[in-house]
Image (cartoon, rainbow, N blue to C red; front, side):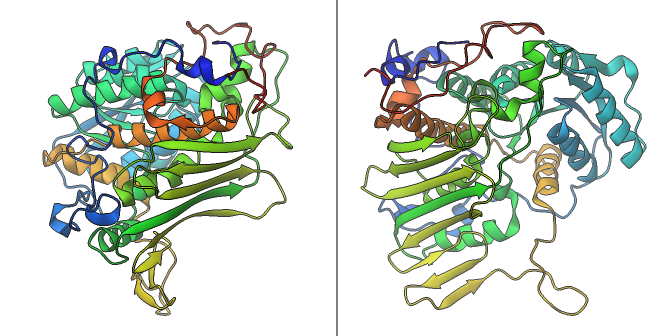
Length: 462
């Protein structure tokens, strides 16, 4: 693993040229076509507000249309990979899963059993692969689509392989844990776009109908120019896995991956990226610098913080406050808030004028008693796959990789600022040579756990 001395110098020294990653001339404020973040008029940029017809909105059908059979391979068969497989199979007709891959046999077995139990689909045993090379074997097995659901440190490698082999992709967030990974995903995103491949990411709020309707209202001027924003993900601690005597060091960490920065990116990247992505989506731009702080108050596993607070600043002087916490017994809050010159919104389902009067409320479906339900008609986890299949079968452009990669980079910028206690800019992060994790992956002892250091902001050298 790269030295865990979280000094600002380390993050910026020897900065890699962006062009070397295949994204020469990349401007983070200009999107790829089809699903990237877009300038939404005077929300931040001062340009005229958008028309709804100018916004990228996924198809949002209740079920994907029938069409040619599509075979999917699942890479990463844990809880989220298994869930993604079931979401894929529920998305529409003529869909199947024909290959599974993971580094652990028990994960492959449990996913295979769940697919059989829920959809009566038997994944052939010869198409079930175990080991760090499982991803290439799944890709080479004859699938049309790959579902990338491993711990996120592996995502850039797997995405590049999928695109080079001309596969459509669903990939979970986050899509990278460091600047090197972000640049790789940006390069692969451009390659996917040039090949007409369809790419959907696990930032499911972009496929959630209440969020989309509020986004359309805000983008067309409902709250005027955006002047501030807040993003929150505060909850109890997530799960952890205690080491077992028969596990190697690598197995211990992968089975406990949400608690290790090199595998997950820390929870500001792994989890809070959802809320940061909503703000990026609604504003149509990205913050350009950050000053943050955080600490490790009660977490006993891994090497991560359990709380972050970051002030993200935009070129026009606007601020977004980002707060995330995983500590039991504290106030919970998973939400977003955007304030404009004419009103404000919770981004999900309501818009208010400056006096606090509700001017828009999302029309949720009614239950049998005629009472509005609190959920959208289609589960957004299913909707992601419905939209992916629809775009494949109707050849509609969709490529969310760049937008998700940039939201990850914004989260990494906040993490680095909190770890170091220093101001960090988006340009510095885009060009940083920071790369987390070992150079090679082996299921053995790699010297990471015993050398792990929890960053202490302000103590690192400049």
